[in-house]
Length: 351
Image (cartoon, rainbow, N blue to C red):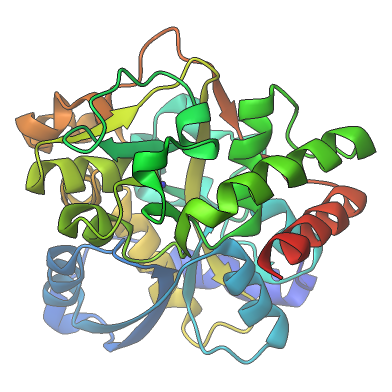
């Protein structure tokens, strides 16, 4: 369920960071303010926000979106007023290249040491200069076993659905996520620009389309639980939350594999409250706080010491524990030609 600032600004940022992390101070003594966060739908734990406000005196406002493309468009438009955004790994390099997010130098933060070493240096941000992990998981699909008993072990059930799923297929509203999963089903690489492969991709998506009820990345779990949808492209955490409400739902680790992803916190250029944004990012690398978000959203975090605080039901769930032999393909930023091809495919599909 794809920046640089001037030396003067870097000096200011460094000064802010030193002052910010010089030591703990009582909540009453900390400067209050309002932190503006822009995150995915149903992806921010209310208890987490309440805890942050209680400890710091900083109020939080939250706006949501349902695709990386929406986030990109919002940041490119400028003047968003957001202090923190949460972007998927394949879009982080795009935001860096287009100077839409600014350095945060996460390695200098006190809680950075809590991150799993494998997530401290990520391919899309090797020096943790611009981002910090939020949550990570897999993308596949869930289906209602009371509607279709199965067995189901292939992405073909989603992209070439049996008749019983007609009009009850739910797909993401994000072009890159739909296309990446379809390419995985085809056995083709992400960012594929081969014309023959793209024609085959269009045919697969057009064949599936009559069975699709909606292309929308919001409300996925609700549609599955209510029965409005009986099969849905979904993120692993959403799948776990949905199954806990409806026991007949099954999350599929397909033989073709699953898409792996990580969402990352970043600070937009022009953020009104850079200092408080850094406070929140450091706050999120605390094990107990990371666990609060994991328990709410159902996804893995990047802080190993959070494990004792994760609810046993979630920690032992199949959605939370991909098979060791699963082919997990992490998304990546595509070159301009592939992005153009993705746009063309999506435009044809949505006509």
